[in-house]
Image (cartoon, rainbow, N blue to C red; front, side, top):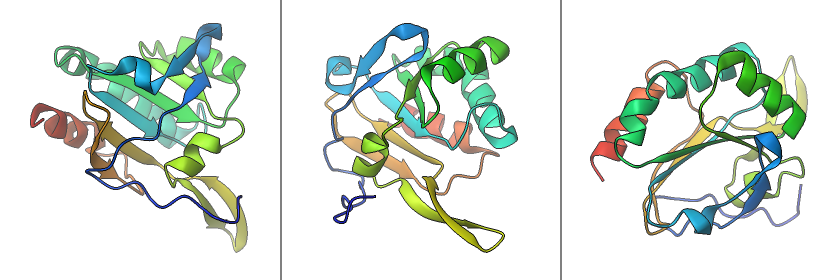
Length: 160
């Protein structure tokens, strides 16, 4: 982790731009999506129970998000190959981006110290950012609990 961690991104601030590799051998650049709202969600690991539930929740509600012209991007440290398998297994119809070097997670303040069974390690905090069509962060959800989260994001998007 860098010594000077980026300040946590708050609602009302410009979303840090990024370009990341994505599933299917592509790439995604946030600034290229201007004109559409973006749901940028960070999750710890492909094909684990909570991450799968969250991804399938966004998948199942995709018509509601698409109807509002929103783009959904899931981000983890997993490789593009891992994303390809995860996406195929659960038929995920949105982009999964690989932040292998954690630069984007650090910029958004979600690369954090975690603790499991007394062991401390660095990992991705489950967090979601709703970015408006002008590139401004409108809502931030940190330490996300999966149950009810997709509905909360959809409600906030509808309120934009």
